[in-house]
Image 1 (cartoon, rainbow, N blue to C red):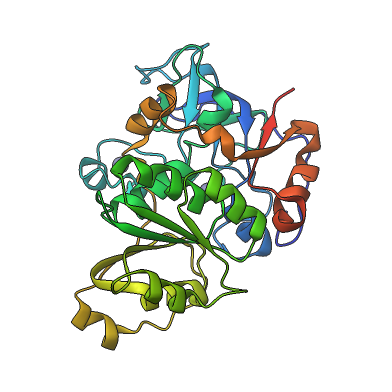
Image 2: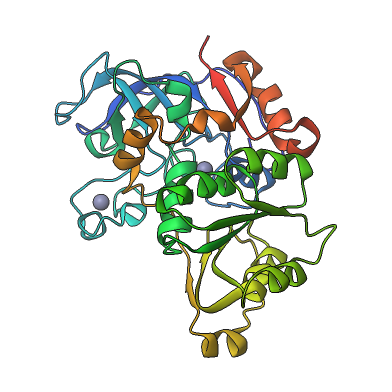
Length: 339
Ligand SMILES: [Zn+2]
Ligand SMILES: [Zn+2]
């Protein structure tokens, strides 16, 4: 309802607009750090009255005449990225920049924090949920796992034997941690100021943790490595954490920025160029979602480990309270269920 003003209230039920739409009954959704940015007023494209949310699983209630892959009753995973599958960017698998989609859910059109949501370009923007799948785990596939995997791990070119540092142990940093292990790095160092998040990171496979509030990150990395880390993944979105990445990267290394930055960073190009450093950025394309779905199905990764709190839809505002006080409540991801 505008910056700082949130309400949980009745809204008109969405209806089919285009023949490529599906109407989906939302079974489970969650809250993203981006939703908190929107509530603060950091994303001015979001107009007052917009229903937030770009993550979730549900059941198809109705499909438009041009939807071929889904029918009423199908259980589906909703992607945070809408893609037409036909435009120049979609043909390059850059779905984030789809000319009739991209990140629009809970941003430019009403999103998934509702009992029912309209999904445009349903054939390309929904994924079928296999029978007996853990649907809570799959909610983590709408956004955070593909984001961590594509923008962190793949852009960072994590390879067997690498030393990887992840700066930021929030839901996306943890998703980087889970998916980096597909590529067998030798060490994964998690860096965060929240001790309980660092403890969790150890359970999820971090070989070492560093708390920059208590220790000098650069000193520890300099002592323990030859000349820095192969890959530094920024998963916070503030100048301080980007600086850590610039400080600890070794020659030939990759800095993969995942965090959403609200202001400019102090790019130390005069130090980085001579070290042959690659810097990457990005918004998730969700082009690896199908692959990730298989790894969750086979239990190679278990993203349900990231869920710390569960609510029902009528507790939506309480869920926001708990998610926005993550350090106090020890929150990682919340699940909000429809009944
Ligand atoms: Zn998100
Ligand atoms: Zn497109």
